[in-house]
Image: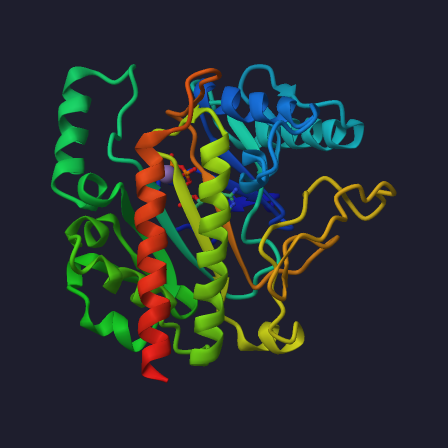
Length: 350
Ligand code: ADP
Ligand code: MN
């Protein structure tokens, strides 16, 4: 029997074990209660009237479709959307047949953020100076404090966790222990690389990521500029939201296939569409077009050349009444500074 599910093809960092369906539209990620709660609370909030003018936090997350518990009995939990519930029930029973899972973790079912990309390049940046939550053991707290102290997590409030990129001339300059070649001309940059970077050379990490040989320097600049704008919008979101993100990541994805750039005439969008607003949605209530320069924030069913998302909530929580999250805000501020520098250097070259 050929499997309906396979391992995630493109992953920048983190644990193995995530699966995707045959169309690669969804991902099924081993998860825990904190992460499920985080997604469910934010999803429920969406129904309320927005409490502030900034982009709601939920819009930066992959769409959450529900969670599955495979094992002796499969349990499906999801919002009201009847079609999605049906689909998930089908996945649950199919996965049950495939996973030997007496002690399997619950799976969160998420929109696959690389769907639509032909040659995705992916960067995982972990946010925050403090990397452990209240539930960590003393041993884990000590270990993660050390990681923070000895890396840019401590100095800048973020750390490059890993990348999956197309091979480029820049890769040859890396230390052997920092990367591994992958099929199809890809390279995986491991966590040791990001841990080796310091405040004064962390920019190299971003130049490695964006210095994609397949894209013209004009296209590379466009991508950097889009992320610069997104980071500023994301910063404003964080100022208006009350959450505690511990060990969550920003996932940067851009298209490395020049053909898709040609096809889309280099037109990109700042935000992803709502995944569940499928083709047959008649309301199109999201059709507002807030503009930043010539880049539309939102149009219906957009095709993307790059995207920024927030992922990984295994240690994060919603913290109503406690104000914004200082621990990650400083990291996003540092990122904005770095992108501003990259843009400045590029314009000086011209
Ligand atoms: P963990 O770090 O606990 O293993 P993450 O949620 O950080 O789990 O995911 C690990 C990696 O999997 C990320 O670096 C990213 O490359 C990939 N990934 C996670 N969520 C998605 C998603 N919704 N779509 C596509 N890729 C994802
Ligand atoms: Mn992670």
